[in-house]
Image: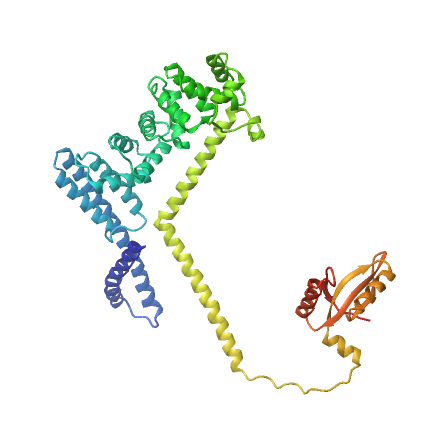
Length: 478
């Protein structure tokens, strides 16, 4: 937003400085015409033209200057002049931060500069902290850059400890580069060293151990140790226990195999593995299995297994889950783009300004109408005439509401309830009402000037237990 304001103000100022004298010169050479329409048209058109021309020229200068400096910096870096190459990159960043580029082309310029900076700092042996942070920021925003991602990972895995920024960049790369086996193998080894067993790490393990079993032969024992420590018993854990058994680490694996036999429900995907586990455990009976499986936590069982999902073919579950996760990632990327897009921020600012102006216009309009009405003299009041009315009509006009507390199909029931309420010193009465083929005898109490008074009186009677329920109705007391 700051760059947008700076760019717009300086561009408008330059447009005014150039358009004003030029428009005066043009008008002085033309035949004078009466009125202000002709000068305003010439001046406004020239101002718009100069404003657009300055934007086009500024973008051309910015793109050309940045491209030349990035190319020159790359050549200097190849020649070993790293200090001069760094200066060229800093000049490119300075042009990017200046008022020359418009907000429309800044995202493309930023991508080109950050890509070049990332490659420059990857080639540096000094491990500049600023360069390291820039690399991680670039990879979080552009995890699809496989060349930079692989080079950064090869350098990052040599670090003994990763902080949260390193893990965030690695996780973004793991999701974006799922088909790059080299990157997946580097990440899988690092995740194993960190002891991670979250969903993303498990996907990396599963992907690599099934694609390249020979290259990941040592992963099974380490991953089996993590699963045994967590008490995990699911299909992937069973597959890992069996693979680790073949590598020779058997004493602790008996517990994991026993837990899988105890808790996993046989299905087409794991029947062969369960049969192999039963063969490996030999003549272990049910009691021994229960003792060995103590401390394990079944991830799913017959009582909580989702029937609909289980009834689907297994070949359909995987694509559905993959498509869902891909849609979620795309939605997250879209939200991130919307939050970081200058055009979206400018559009939101315009919408907010329009709403503010509309609200202000409505308020001013209402205020003006109020002042106008208040300033007009009030019309004289009509003369009042006193008309004598019957007492009953006067009471009905003053108290138009009542509360109905019951309705019966038999008259004697209504009369008995009215007598009971009158015994409590209440102004109760009943009246007849017809609806289609039925006649109701409605029991009502008192009359009130407004609904609030009737509602309050009914609530008080209900709280005291005098009536069970009520509702406010129009009074048409006979």
